[in-house]
Amino acid sequence: MTALARWLSIVLHPFVVIALMVAVTSVKLEGGRSAGASVAMVAAFIIVPLAILMFLQVRRGAWENVDASRKSERPVLYAVGLGGSALLLGYLLLRQPGSFLIRGTAITLATFGICAAITPWIKISLHAVSLGLAATVLILLGSAAGWGLAALAPALFWSRVHLGRHRVIEVALGAVVGLLGGLAIHFL
Image (cartoon, rainbow, N blue to C red; front, side):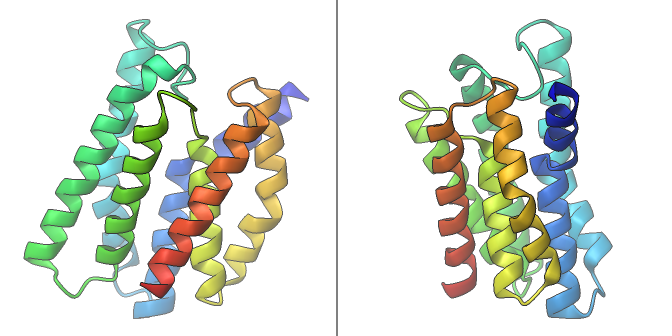
């Protein structure tokens, strides 16, 4: 069962889920004309810097695993995530003011900020946040991919608890934060 839990955590990793959301959103809103470029932009500003941080922190022994599973590991994760999101938002506002990514990036920045602010008390599951956010956004856009992600949510939540990365409350709060973020992206 542990192998299945690890597999689910990798396949439904926030990097994968967010890239999928950006690509599908591009297809739905722009006919896919900029899907690759949009995913590449999110990767360049947010995913790649976070992936490099994770690799370096684990390699030098500062982190137990790439999930930043201890509360003490989270501040630097959030600093890099917040910084990358802020830089991407600034870039989009200056260079692509009509981009569909602006609203999503702003809400992602706010979501990262909320998770960072409450980390001293509870370590919210970023896997659950990203899955909740992506599923909500895609369902509200009328994409079957959103329903697929929603159907996989219980399995992902189980995997995070089974691996000992989170408690049930941390996964549940992550799902709620993601859901609210997805609603904000759609309705604001």
